[in-house]
Length: 408
Ligand code: ASP
Ligand code: MG
Image 1 (cartoon, rainbow, N blue to C red):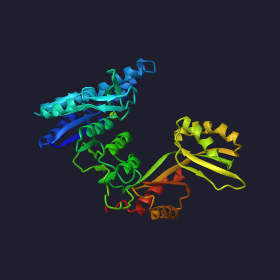
Image 2 (tube, rainbow, N blue to C red; image 1 turned 180 degrees about the vertical axis):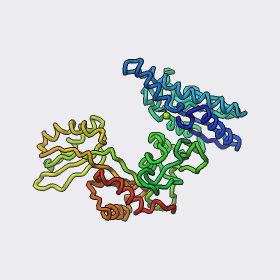
Image 3 (cartoon, helix red, strand yellow; image 1 turned 120 degrees about the vertical axis):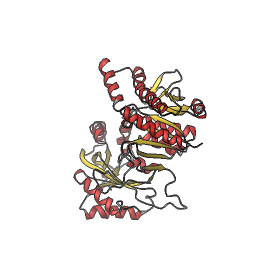
Image 4 (cartoon, rainbow, N blue to C red; image 1 turned 120 degrees about the horizontal axis):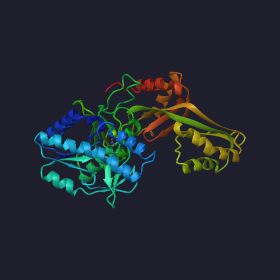
């Protein structure tokens, strides 16, 4: 029998009515002859509420072990209630905690990683004809302590179970109906995609249905197709998979436009052009776990050069602090941070070897009078750093230039 893992997010199981609605969906699928393992998140804002309670009673710093045990109860509530609702419809169902479902993790409370899934209990329940409902976001250590996987971790649970069980696919039901070609709040013509590759999804994940990047990486690694759709209607969603645009030679296509306002540019002016400078600047940032994105070094004039890189705006102050001693040591003329920049990217697989895309992007921005500050490319995207004030214009003009409003 075909096996599908479904995941329902907290906003899809917010109250008793919604839980009954999900139960009907699962029951219907089962009625079509599909085996179902359903993973649920905690109802609505339960996790936030529990964290608030824990913070309040503990004077600000809850013990990580107790906190994880506490937070795991949120998913136990929705899991057991859903199992009851499914039974009320006349289907056999069993609710399992992460522990009962065989999910083993390491001991990193608050962001544990799954080490192994022992699927024997789930398989036994499926063989007996049960619908299996699993509490997401949790597992257990070798010492039988309950852990949680980090905020949004139920996505990871669902994909991990799909991989471990060899399910046909993992379906993620949420309150939006798929992944869009751009942020629909910025571009009115943004269109829902029928399909998207894993890597592209990682770049566009913030537009439309939000999925945890870790779950997408896991899906890519184990080649689990992930279908993202709304739990509120039957509108077709977006399939995230690795086989997109298969062919002897992959055809390049821009899938969507991504943008990011959380960017700051740090510049060291007039640093000596000699081996070791970039390393000296970037090493202390790495030591502080500040990730650096775009890096640009200019041609040097009289052996002095400018070095610019971007970090998230959130990290900017800390990055300045970390780089300051290095800047002084190497005798840089100035060290500046600019919070007024943003990133805009065209995303699509196979772009690195297709120069036409970059020129089309630059032409579109030029025609809009948008100045490009820095440029980076990767296999699947071309990114320009531009001024904050023009981001929306940039996204719109690129969406138009690559004709993303049209179905191909
Ligand atoms: N309930 C957890 C959270 O809110 C896990 C999840 O929703 O996936 O982060
Ligand atoms: Mg949640």
